[in-house]
Length: 149
Image (tube, rainbow, N blue to C red; front, side, top):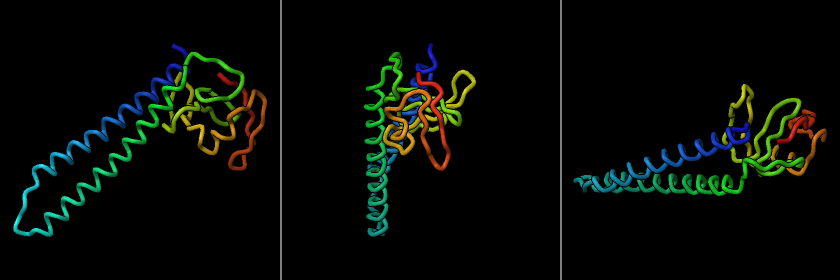
């Protein structure tokens, strides 16, 4: 398995774990809504239901974000190679290593640390379209692109 395939797999696991967590929250809240019974303190009951519905709405929005991440990942071919930075590229610089995919944070593969970043993030936008030996300045640091995979 190539390093890109390993990073891609970690991103898929990140998205699937996140989706499972959010779906668990939604079902738990749905069960709580169904079991909530009207008490003599009617206002307290209504407040509880409203809070649960707000939590479910928030979780639904988060789930929508997860589906968008899945859509981005579906556009990545982990076997594609290019000398120009694009969605799915691994970029090694003199400071950090990046995997242009989704915002999934720090990943590790083959004893190296990579940051899974979105192409719409500030650093992602700077890297897109660049080639080896190009310089970019991010957060006051001059970075040089050493490798693109």
